[in-house]
Amino acid sequence: MDRQLISRLAHADHPIAAPLDDDSVRRLLAQGVPRGDARVLDLGCGGGEWLLRALAAHPRLTAEGVDVSEPALAHAREAANRLGVPDRLVLHHQDAARFTSPHRFDLVLCVGSTHAFGGLPAALAAAREHLAPGGRVLVGDGFWEGEPSAEAVEMLGELTDLPATLDRVVADGWTPVGGHVSTRRELDDYEWSWTGSLASWALDHPTDPDSAQALDAATTHREGWLRVYRDAFGFLCLVLRPTSQ
Image (cartoon, rainbow, N blue to C red; front, side, top):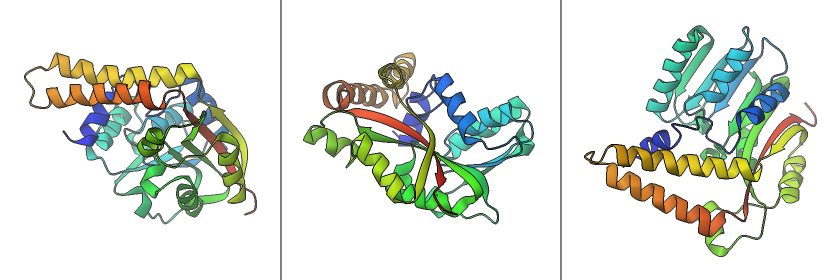
C-alpha cells in the first residue's frame, strides 16, 4: 500500500499532520504571520491545511505550498476552491528540498516535514534561503521528552532533548520568538486519530485489496506508539527569526 495513501487515510480526521490542536495551530500562525499581506511558503505542505487556515484568516495573504504527493496537493486545491481562495494559493508538485523560487517569503513553514531535508538543521538552512528580510520560520520537529530506548531511537532517529534542540537552533543563528510544546493530550489525540482513522477505513472497506495492509499498518503503528516511544517522544514547534540578517 502506497505510503502517501496511508498518510492521507490516517489524517482524514486530523488534517494537521502533527500533534497540535486547533488552538495551538491558530496561536502559532498568529505568531508566525508578520502582517496581513504576507507571502507564505510551506515546505512539505501535504494537504495544505496550514496554508488554508492562514489564507482564511488573512484576506490579503498569498501562499505557496510544495509537496511530493499529488493526491495531497489535489486535496489542497479542492479545499482552496471550497474556501474561495484558489487565486491566492500556488502549489508545486516537487521535492521540497529542491524547490526554488524567484521571490522570498515572509513566513516559511516546515512542520513535521524536516525529514524531507535530512533533519532539523538542514530544514532550517533551506528555509533561510527562502526567507525575506524581517521574515519568520515556523518549524515543527520531534525531541526526546524522556529517555529513549534503543528501539525508539532506531524508529524515530537521532533526536535530542528539548534544551539541546534549542541550543542547536540558536547556534545555527536563529532566535526563538514564539513556540509550543505539544501537550500529552495533543500527542495522544494525534496518535489515536492516526491509527483509528486508518483502521476505520480498513474495516469499512473489507473487500478493498488494500484493506488488510491498512489494518496491519494501523496496528503496527499503535503498538510502536504505545510500547516503544509514547513515554519518550515530544513535539516542538518554534517561531524563529534570524539572529542577524
